[in-house]
Image (cartoon, rainbow, N blue to C red; front, side, top):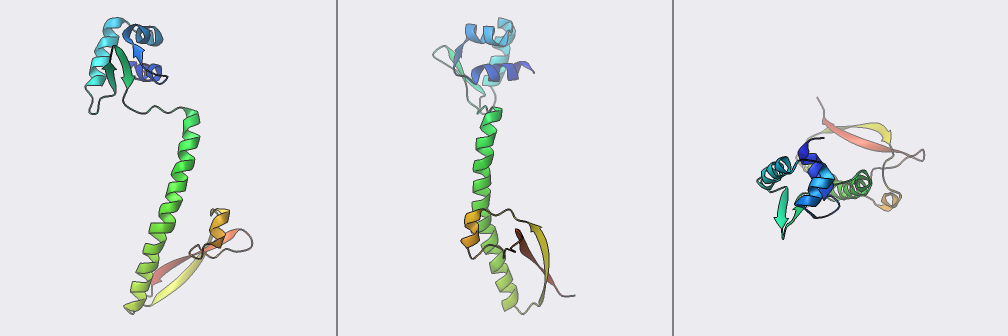
Length: 142
C-alpha cells in the first residue's frame, strides 16, 4: 500500500495529530508532511488539518460497510427500475401501438429476482409458478 493509502486507513478511525499519524503509518515525518500537503491539495482535498488534527474529507469504507451499502444500492436500483424504467418502456410501447407499428412479442424465461412484495404489484412481469417470470421483448416485424 502506498503512503496515501496508509494515511487514509490511519484516519479512518478518526482525526489524528501529526505525531499520532507518524506512529500509525510508520512513515518518516518529512515524507508524511509531504504526502499530507499533496493530499490536502487534491480537489476536493483528501485530508484537512483542523486545530492540529488531520482528518479525512473522503469516505473510507471497510469490507463490512460494503454489505450495508450494496443492499441500499440494490433497493434504490429496484425503486428506479419500478418507477422509471418500467413506466418508460410501457409508455414507449403504447406510443408505438398508437402510431400503428406492428410488434411481435417474444417471451424468454429469466430467473426470478423480484422481491416477495413485488408479486402484488400489477406492473411486475407475469410470474410463473416455478419461480420464473416472463419478460416481453418487443421487436418490429420485418
